[in-house]
Length: 151
Image 1 (cartoon, rainbow, N blue to C red):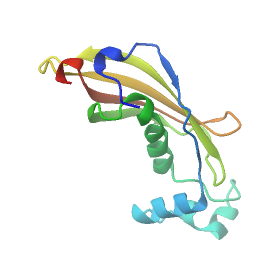
Image 2 (image 1 turned 180 degrees about the vertical axis):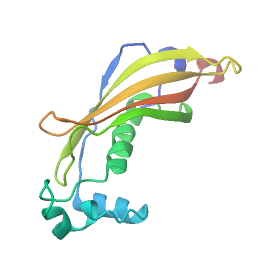
Image 3 (image 1 turned 120 degrees about the vertical axis):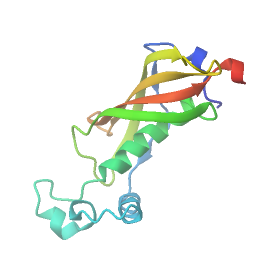
């Protein structure tokens, strides 16, 4: 599926993304090692087992990337010029190995660029839930999107 152009986004539209992912121990370990994040809460089962969680937490930056990544096929694949920023990032509940993530995205606002007529800015709110419907991540993202005139 091709991504949407600036003019095709409707403020208030909610995308319920059909793509889901069950997070594995390997996903968490590989991401943590690749990013040089040696936080034992993510990679040390003995350490994590002695915390209030009783087991390793999935790295929150992996969760953030997965949440946004899941949204791409339905929204921005091939039509994004750049991500401009992510704000209001929260992780209200932990994500663990074996949890399955599903994502919803709401279009919060759109506007044409003030300086370049071939593009504009779309603001999204992404929400990730585990298999029990518990919110595990949320963020607002601003993306520079191609206009249909750029196609």
